[in-house]
Length: 190
Image (cartoon, rainbow, N blue to C red; front, side):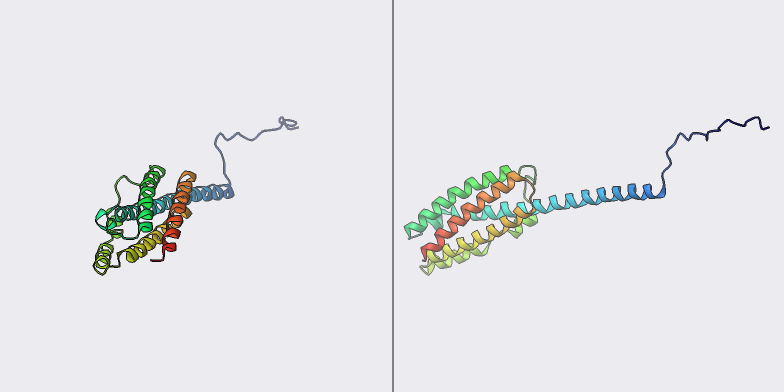
């Protein structure tokens, strides 16, 4: 008879973890998915930053046009003058609201390439020529409508990229102000 008969021998306990090949592949896939997610998320934040910088610069250009006393004092149509004054106040407030909503999402100073891309050199010349040809009111109205359309398109793009609800609400409010101003300008029919 065997002296070990009736005793069950247990296998030695392994203190380390043993992973199957399947478990390693799943873990590796999860790590890869997390890394890809982080890269995509950081890329979308860069996209919102670039779009937002363009929006801030474009709004600044509109504000400069609206607050140019040399031009606005020569407007003859009183209704146009009232719209410009009201829009100037609205844009000033909107810029403050936009900057507050974008805090931390854009750098304090605009990227120089974005500032250069948003610099408008042709509008001043167009307005000067319109003044000399006694067509300032009509041309100024057309320029404002085009600038408003451009800004509204950029607001829509920025809205689509944003995940921040405060920014989305601010963009919606800005778009509403611009839509109303554009409608008023189009109704003038100068």
